[in-house]
Image (cartoon, rainbow, N blue to C red; front, top):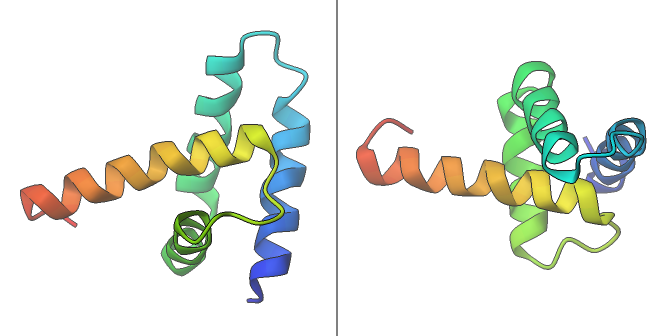
Length: 81
C-alpha cells in the first residue's frame, strides 16, 4: 500500500477522534485503532514514515504513531518484537 494512502487513512482516523475533547484520550483512541485494525505491515510503514519526518500527517495521528513507535522500540529492546 502506498504511504500516501496510509497517511490519508491515519488522518481520517484522526479526524474522527478529533471530536474527543480530551486530547490524550483521542491519541490513545487513534493508536488503539491502528493496533487493532491495521495490518502489522501497515503499522510498520506508517512508523517508518513518521521516523522520516511524517510528511502529511496531522498532529493527532502523529502523536498516536509516536506512541506506537515507542511501544515498538520497547518490544525490540525486551526481545518481544
